[in-house]
Image (cartoon, rainbow, N blue to C red; front, top):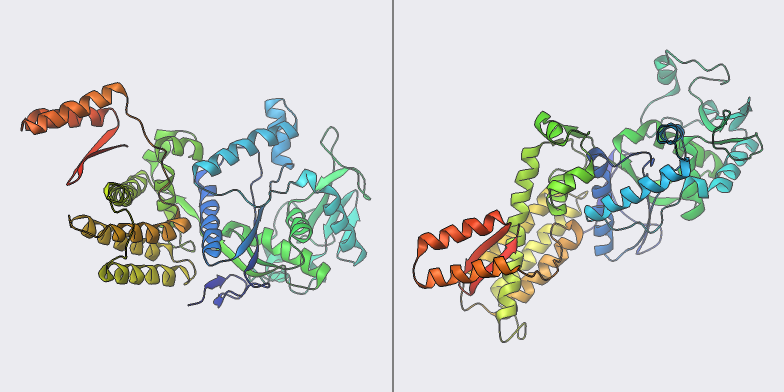
Length: 468
């Protein structure tokens, strides 16, 4: 099997071959840190975390960069609104963003370069474009000459004539052509700024990613990712800037996830704040959010509703319950994982893993990969139903699940939970009630525990409890 990725640049699935064997250079556009993460922004975050995880599962060392845009017009307005500095706005929302990432089960990037820490690199990049005739200055602003770059529009499949036809408003007399885009913006009085050969100012949006990629990953990277809304103009402009300067492709593979549509008025009203990740995390566990995001192929639109999240939550509970029961059976076994697993289990696990990887290697087909996870759940439950099951089978089941879960991260390793005195008292009373066949009292106690957020499960090996 070989991994194939749909390349936005070529509009085809291509076999993925990194420039260096077993090493992948990957860049994903990060946030402008002027507010809390919206659920729509969580989709690319989870999608490209999954991509990175799978590349690592295949044995690659992934150098994964995502940037922080920590100065721009929105941040300046937010600083004025809050009566604090732009730097303070950045620190506030970078911390909130990283907290959301952790809450979504997303691994930290290898590096998070910031615009304000990359200013010399950005200025040097613009100067080189100017020296090669791809940039020009007018009134302290510097623009990119789109007409000089013959392939402008190749990523989004637009041409300059179409773009010129589409321009109707906000004609800028400082530009040679209206489709030219800004590389450096002259500072207005009182605005945060940096010194440059063109006067005091700050970078345009598009230039920062090109400069950071070249600085930290090199001329050409393996994968560049982001939401489909970034395809034009942002990624198109990145291509034009970098390739005009280096003569080499910015990225060998371009990946774009489709939009997340908000389709449930009830959900919006219940949260009342634009569907922020921090508020959704307060209601749903990370596994449910990740399951929902990965339940549709990343290139297909996804409709966000409360019902979909509730369904995802139930699905993850089924997976987590099977995983927990398998762990429980293995812990109870005096023999532990010693010995060899049965041929029936090992063969079925091999088939499940083969199917999982076949689906993942077909452009990260996570919906079908999740189906393979449920095939594992079925096998786990079947094995659990056998009181004489080989303990080594449970060890093999856990090993196979860990391989798939390392990619999807639908369940997390829970810390050992300790019951409160009240919970322990109720559990002991229920055990006694069942001994005495007092089924009505047993059911009452189950309901009381459920109200306290405790779920009970009666297994052949005894009663287990867990928190909701």
